[in-house]
Amino acid sequence: MANKEGKGSTNYDAVIVGAGFAGMYMLHRLRKLGLNVRVFEAGEGVGGTWYWNRYPGARCDVESLEYQYGFSDDVQRGWTWTERYAAQPEILRYQNYVADKLDLKRDIQFSTRVNSATYDGPSGLWRVETDKGDNVQARFFIMATGCLSAARVPDFDGLEDFKGKWYHTGGWPHEGVDFTGQRVAVIGTGSSGIQSIPIIADQADHVTVFQRTANFTLPAGNRPLQDEEIQETKETLLEKRKFARTTPGGIICFEYNETLLEEMTPEEVQHELESRWTQGGFAFLGAYGDEMATDEANKVAADFAREQMSKRVTKPGLAETLMPNDHPVGTKRLCLDTDYLETLSKPHVDLVNVREHPIERITEKGVLADGTEYVADAIVFATGFDAMTGAILGVDITGRDGLSLRDKWAAGPRTYLGLGSAGFPNLFFITGPGSPSVLSNMIVSIEQHVDWITDCISRLTNGNIGMIEATPEAEDEWVEHVNEVAGMTLYPQANSWYMGANVPGKPRLFMPYTGGVGIYGEKLDEVAAADYEGFRLGA
Image (cartoon, rainbow, N blue to C red; front, top):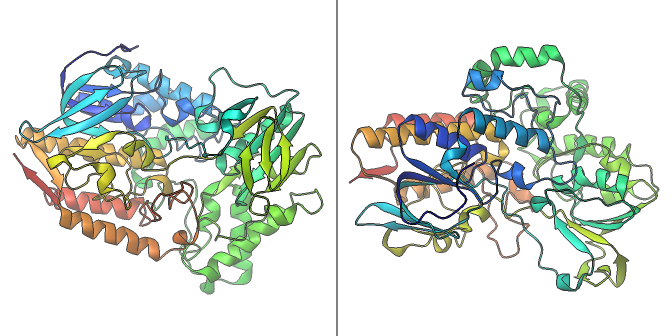
């Protein structure tokens, strides 16, 4: 394992922040170019999101046969997945397998958090400082910090008074937590809450779930993988990955039906919805071409989803509270679950609707909501992340002429292609705001970005070009385009983390690019073919 201690002042060709899927692949590609690269990682090992998110039931919502690297036949043939949707421990084992196979850890400094990065105009270098006392310089500075990696604990009054233990799903104790015999309060019913609550309820004596927003959730349909499908993927993964890059979501386990709702018979619509619901996963959002584009088309799918969800709720009077009625289906991240709705119907599980009964504070004994104190031995915050920008802005980044990225993004993130930002030369974001990122299979989008960045750095290095920087004009046009395309969908209607709505005071705007992985990839190719049109290349 790489050295954990600070190394003083050192020069590198590139510094990468983060050793998850993005940072690992970026390191591999840049080493292939012969560059001297250093990765700084806050955790004690590789994994990124999957290193920290060890909460009970943590599981990927993209099928494991697609949620893996597709750049190396040797790498993919050496690993065999066991389940349709891999759980966190298996994903982390896979990441360590890749890191060991490619000998990545020798260039990663673990247990080290990057505090600041400052661009020095005269030298054209980034000066990077860490909490371990490192003060290094690099020509390229690459943020591979992930879109869901800055855990957000709500600022509830009284948390310091609580006599029990509290946990956040995004920073779970690595030794695990045993809730046997305990009374547990779970705050939050997004993906991490929906995944963890059934397992917590299997252990605990009593669980009180605090729900702010009812979410659309459907059975994951997880199962062991069959030998024949594993082998078929080993033979075809690399070729299918090329095709995945042409699809809207970078996922090929289902087809997007481009036929509009009005062009289908009621029987055809019902068949599409039923078969996709049964299939599980994000296939449900591809039932017809305008499902995410018009209220009328979305309502048909949403009504179907609510009907199916209601069938799973057996506790009297509970179904109405659990039905999502304040946002179109799919405009918040669609959740996949195993027995979530069934768990909430169990006698020892209670649901508190915090829209009707707001949480006032945390007390010594538990949670006070609307005058009622809910006693708890432990509190689990399943409250998500400061998504897409939180981890980037967690580093004090200063660009040309003292420009602070935090100041520049104070009204919302501004990037060109989600890859760079005007005023910050040789700074790259992997799956940054303004790219498809969280609306896609993240592995596909990561590889798409890393490959583009690698080709770009190769162009600069071979051409003896010192700097690349997004132009303000190209950035303005791209931000406008991202907003325009988002406005053609229903996504902005929901108060989602896509919009930053889960973080008080965060600007409300839709951060990912809804145009899809395929269309976005064509734009990347066009920009590169035009010698990085929209970027300024110079000394």
